[in-house]
Amino acid sequence: MGSGRVVLRAVKEGLALLFLIVIIAVAFFSPAAFADDAENVCVSCHMELDDVLKQVAVDWQESAHAKAGIQCQHCHGGNPYDVALAMESSQGFKKKPAPNEIPALCSKCHSDPVRMRAYNLRSDQYDLFRFSVHGRKLLEQKDAEAPSCVSCHGKHDIRKVDDPQAKVNRKNIVKTCASCHANKELMDKRKLPHNQLELYTSSVHGKAYFEKGDLGVPTCFNCHGNHGIEKPQTLATRFVCANCHVEEADAFKKSRHWAAAQEGGKPLCVHCHSNHGIERATLDKFTGQGQLDCVSCHKDSANIMTVAQGLNESMSKAKGALSSAEFALKGMEEWSGSGFETSGLKEKVAKAQKIYKEMQVGAHALDGKAIDDQSAAVVALSNDVMGDVNKMLTELRKRKLGLIATWVVAFAFCTILWKRSQYCRRDD
Image (tube, rainbow, N blue to C red; front, side, top):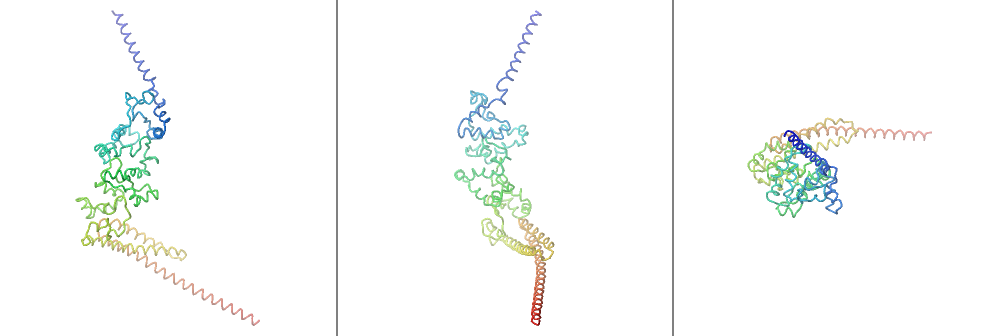
C-alpha cells in the first residue's frame, strides 16, 4: 500500500510538472510571445493597398500612438500577427467604430490615470467631453456630425500637441476648429453662424496670429476650452477675457456694469468689444452710434451718457496733449546736433504715457472723477514738455540768427578785404 501511494504521488507530481512545462512553453514560444518583434500583418497588408487604405498605415507609422507602442489591435481588436485571425470577430476584431463610440474607445486608455501619468497627460478628458456642448450633441442627441476625438486629433495620424503637424497644435488649431465652424452647410443645419474664422482673421488677435505669426495671442481653445467646451452664453465664457486682461477686469468689477451683469448677464466684455471680430477700441466707443457703443444700450438722454461723454472728453484731451508732446520731443531729438539735453523731456513723456495707459484701463470702472484727475496730470506733464521744447526752440532760433549774423559779418568783411586788395593792385 505504501509503495502504491508513493508511485501515485510521483505520477501526480510528474503530471503537474509536465502541465507547468506546457504552460511555460506556450507562454514563451507561442507567436504572441514575440508579438513585439513579429510582423504586423495589418500594416504590411495596408501598405500594399492603394489610396486611403494605404494612407491609414502610413499615418499610423508617424503617429504618437505608434511611437508609444499602441498598435492596431488596441483600438480595432483582432490578431495583428496572424493573417487568418487579423479580422476575426472571435479575436475581438471591430470594424470602423461609429462616431458616438469613439470617445469611450479612446477613454479606455486616456481615462486611466496610471497609463496617462507616464506621458504627463490628464485622465479626465472623457468626463469633460461628455458634458461639453460637443459631447452632449454626440452622445446624448446622437448627432453623428458632432465632433468626436478624431475630428480634432485625427484618426490614425494622431500627433502630440507640441508637434507642428498636429491638428491641435497652436499654429493649426484655428483651422481645425474652422473645418466645422466655417462650414456653412453644417452650421446652417444647427442655426449657428459660420463666419467666426472670417471675423477672427480681421480682429486684432487674428492679425497677430496669421500675419505676424504670434502664437501667444488667444485662439479658439483659449476662450472656449478644448474638451470641456461650454455654451458661449455662459458667464465663464463671456468673461474669459479676464484671464489675459487682468487689470481691465479688475477695473470693470468696480463699475456699475459688473453689478448689472451679475443680475442680468450683461454687459460683459463681448457686449462692448465683440467676441471673434475684436478691434482696437477707440474713444468713439463712448459717444459713437455703433452696435457696440454705449448708445446701443443707453439712450442719448440717459444720465449714464453724461458719464460717457465726460470720459470721452477727458481722455481725448489727454490724448491730444500727449500726442503733441510726443511730436515735439521727436522733433527735438532729430536736432541731434543742437546740443540740448532731452533726457528730462523723455522722462516726462514716459510718465504721461504710463498715466494714459492707466486711464485706458481705468475707463472700465466708469469712474469719471478718477479719469479727470489722470487727464489733468497727463495734460500738465505734456504742457511742461511743450513749454521746455518751446524754450529750446527759442534758444535755437537765437543761435541760428546769431550764426546768420556772424556769416553776414564775415562775408561783408571778406568782401571789403577783396575790394581793398583790388584797389591796391590798381595803385601798383
